[in-house]
Image (cartoon, rainbow, N blue to C red; front, top):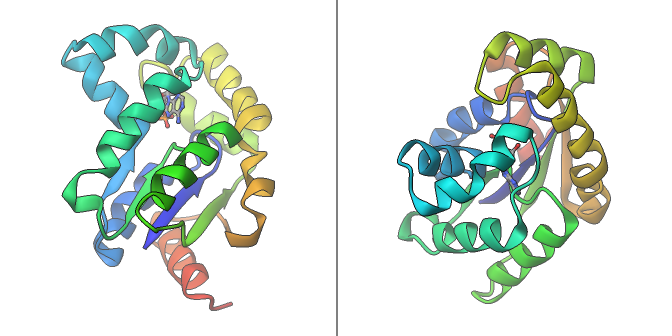
Length: 183
Ligand code: AMP
């Protein structure tokens, strides 16, 4: 299954992706995790992107898209993937469509995590990642609303939405039911 997870920062996409990858048998590909790995290994790419992550700004597309292109070309992604944090803009979605179409593939679904902003902000304040300072958190929510939320219209035909408020296991069940098309 070729799946994209969409939802505001702090919605629990990464946690759910870790649950779902076992059930669906596809790798969890998080662009945020890939960037953070580059930063901690102090690669050239890591040095280039650090300031964007620290500020909660999107990394430029030419860097992000090529990193994703390389990752999707790895053998473990040949039969599907759970993309978490990409695409984050309609322009990135267009590039993803081209990458998949080149191999005759397409996305199966876009899973939307619906959750009120005050809940995610409280959650992120408690999490304490390097970019979890209040000002940066608020900025990331703003970037989500203006840049990423329009993806839900872009992908309207394949969006499956779930209520992402609740316990981790319960949300995982909702996700699986929604992806199976159950009500
Ligand atoms: P995340 O772990 O998904 O919250 O991403 C953390 C940070 O990584 C974001 O605030 C951006 O700086 C950067 N990032 C992750 N994914 C993307 C993307 N698709 N496009 C641009 N920047 C991204």
